[in-house]
Amino acid sequence: MRDLVLYGNHESGHSYKVRLFLTLAGVPHRYVWVDVDVPRAVRPEEFRRVSQFGEVPVLVADGQPQAQSNAILLRLARETGKFGPPPGSSWEQLTTWLFWEANRIGFSMANLRYYRRGFDTAPSGAMTWVESRALADMDRLQQELSVRPFLAGDAPSIVDLSASAYVFLAPEAGVDAARALFPGGRASTPSWRAEAHPIPLGDGRGDGKILAPPGPPPHVEGRRRKRT
Image 1: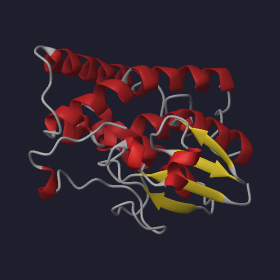
Image 2 (image 1 turned 120 degrees about the horizontal axis):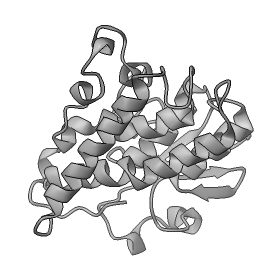
Image 3 (image 1 turned 180 degrees about the vertical axis):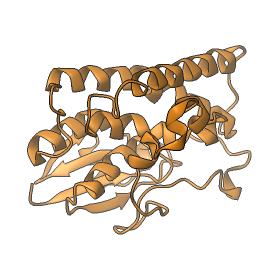
């Protein structure tokens, strides 16, 4: 990969996953911030041309675009040799976990955060349902991490980077991620969540900064926001 361009947004946990990989793996890239508050049809032509679904993130490698955060992580891991299967694991196991993340955390925590931050009003009963899924997902992670250091084995992989994005943002969804994930003995040791984020935090807009949504900015109060 000689020329990498990542299109993302600082509010997107899915964008965060990919930026986290590129930063931890030391992969040079250019970051292009995309305003997702505007309708997809009026987003920059440069972005619309490479974004299959009109969403962030999109990674363009040597002119070839790849959409969907977990698909991007798989591609990056295979092509860079970084954060692949730990010893005793396999690409099939990583793929299984990535599908789980997309169906569970990437759905439940993302939607719970979306509604809790007031970007839209949840349909009747939806908040309770989404929150129950999110808490069940935290319980599942806690079970897995109680028997091994990382989700796929003894070393971090793209599975951990993928799952950690919305766990990192759990407080914005009203979920105490640290308590949910580490209620027992591991609370006294460096947590999986901390180990997955040994990077500087910023607003995600500049090439030298990493996504760290600081909370609802003042200008979004009462403003309808589109999920990406």
